[in-house]
Length: 80
Image (cartoon, rainbow, N blue to C red; front, side, top):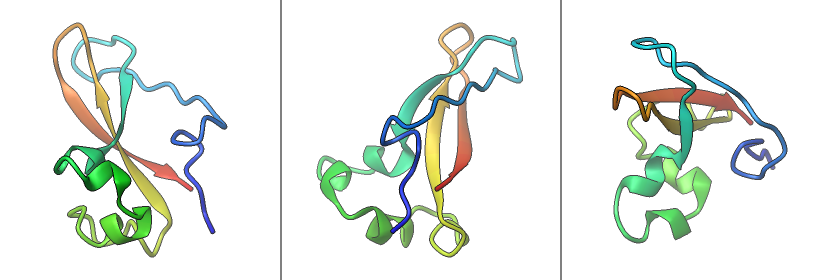
């Protein structure tokens, strides 16, 4: 079983905003924002409906990052 190092607190990865250069805040898995119950669903099941065809096969966790300065939202793929 593969696990996301960000979701499980094993690693910290820093990304910077392409628009203003501010450090981005990790808002968690993108699929957690789909509905009220999606944070409680199996991660592999959610990868089948996350909108990215390669995430399940390539063991990627899709995270949403937010810039608090300019309000930009960015999706990053994290290797599990």
